[in-house]
Length: 168
Image 1 (spheres, one colour):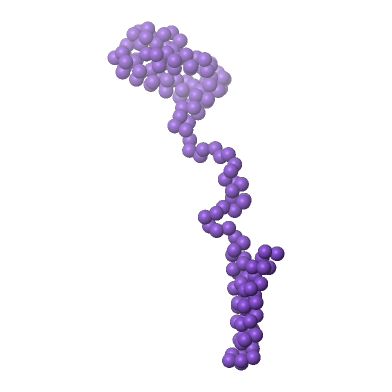
Image 2 (cartoon, helix red, strand yellow; image 1 turned 90 degrees about the vertical axis):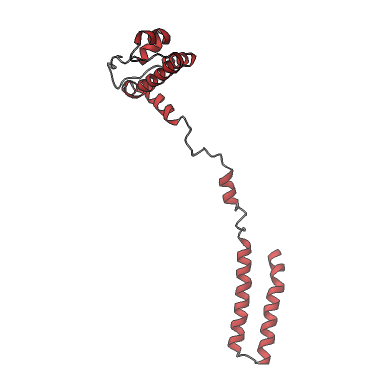
């Protein structure tokens, strides 16, 4: 009903233009009807465009999409370490080839910075500082796992070694 009330004056003006143009015969009748059709088409197009939301306002569909909880697309700063840890816990071979060398590098850096001890050159001192449990994980001569596809390290082992490294 609101649309009809809003469009009634505009359509009335278009009809008045047609009524004025037909009797005075300034232009041919066919052209007067063409002008009238163009006016009605313009009114219809304006109404159609008015039904779309303005560009700065979101449609209800877009608003519903935006309100859903989204997960961040950016990976966390520790995504590589988290993935490495999960794979090291799941597969013994991955732990031996990737996780333990990362842990060994961290231990070497911590020992060197805090105590001036080189992990490779002073293994006895490093072993004493690290403790047996952490040393067993970071030593260079650690034997390969018997079952490379078997389960990896235990989470408690890694947590204890990391806690020990942090305490150095």
